[in-house]
Image 1 (cartoon, helix red, strand yellow):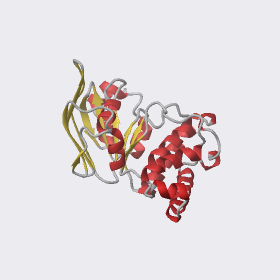
Image 2 (image 1 turned 90 degrees about the vertical axis):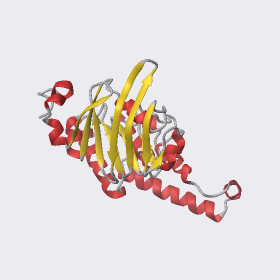
Image 3 (image 1 turned 60 degrees about the vertical axis):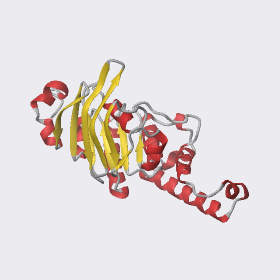
Image 4 (image 1 turned 30 degrees about the horizontal axis):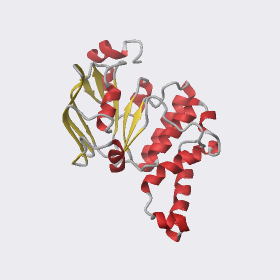
Length: 255
């Protein structure tokens, strides 16, 4: 088991945001988390990735407890993520965004960096090559030298995803990756995620509102309402679940 969440609950003061949440993700699986606004989806992401510590429950990554670890330590263990609101360095170019993300993987010493040792030069070359490969994968190589703030919104989303992949995660958390995208950008994002999944074999947990996206990509889906899972299973089963239709999808949205 790659990621396992057992009976996770969380309170903000007297408000119960998540109640008894359970999750199991196998290596290479694509898992969707859907629900109406305010259902607690991003809170689930924040609890697993170390932004908040769950009030109750267990979090296991490859059998190792990550509950209570700081966010950067959880990231180093293999969970990469994007955010609902873009968190990019707006006045840095695209290539440097990806290069900087690789530096968490550096192995050479400060001495080597200062004097330009062979190990330092070799790793810098590897970072350059890996960064440009990610730009190609996410179809943003032609933006390499541009400031990220000058890019179209959909391209900025892809920069954030490429940056997350630069940390070499075992599982990638995507928080509404198609938010604000046009139908053409949506189709491009579906193709990119399929390519990333095939090329890197990474597991994916995604929050998404666009059901076309979920139905085409996910192996399994959970539906969260008021912090509780009301349904889970294959996308086709979820799509036709009366409780899900009533709580979230709406009959006109699911076909």
